[in-house]
Image (tube, rainbow, N blue to C red; front, top):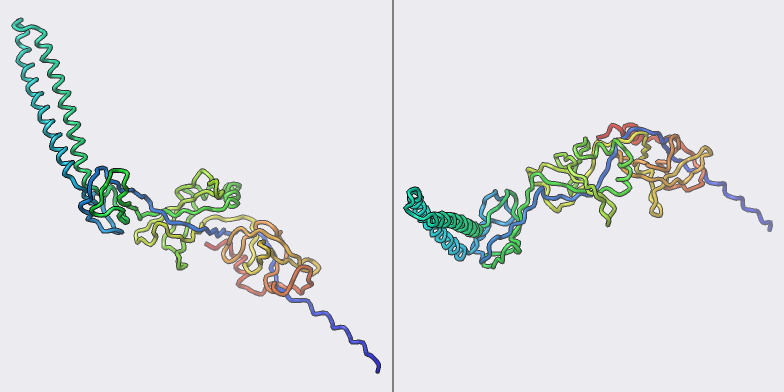
Length: 369
């Protein structure tokens, strides 16, 4: 029986892919960072006077006003000290009155030599000593009165009072014991830390430095944990001049009005900067950028319709597109659709992308806000 040679299967046709032509454009950067909410001001409440806490009239976690009573401390000893100091002041004032009277009687007698000058000098000296004694006693009385008043601990500022750390019946040693804290929540700060590479790029860009400086035009928008946008924009009001040696980053801080108390200290949010644009930037749709071995790559179709793998550096967002920092040049054909069925060196049948939404996003990305 004759063996017939099996004919070889024809090669598969080239895969069809869609591409966009990389073109430089002016785009708005969509920079996103993890931000953390901080209180506008935090005040530690400490007792200046020692003793047992007798009363805590405030409710934890509520709003208090400046001057509101937070704690009352046993004032028996302080009250006794204040009364004793007032008594010593009265005694000193009586000695002063007597010294003034004695000096006023002796001064006229000196004119007619009816008394020795030494006696007048002694009277004047005693008067000065009596005045000094009054001042000393008055200072001691004021200090005692202050210690008495400090047995009532009041809020120094208005804000949200935190959890109490010492309850009724506990003994307070003095300033070493922290009683509670008060946080000012309107406005609040949100801090975020751009990467070292991002900071270096801003440092080289004069316009970015100007817009991101305190008082610059850049605005910060927040996205809450549920994805919703915070209704008010923030402004950068502080840039730490020192780089954190542990992370290599600098702290940026934005201020937000928070009358509705939606932002709470310690909360994590997404912070995005608006108002920064890039000239001659190349952007490609998100789906064109692949992650391989921890690197970002795209497929490029060359003049021979062959696929070339190109490593790129995608540094940020612009609308729904990646902003390509390095790896692409203007005029190159970047594969957008069909990337799953091709590989480096493959021959393809390439055509311009038909996704009008994607092409519109590329051309209009500079107008996005």
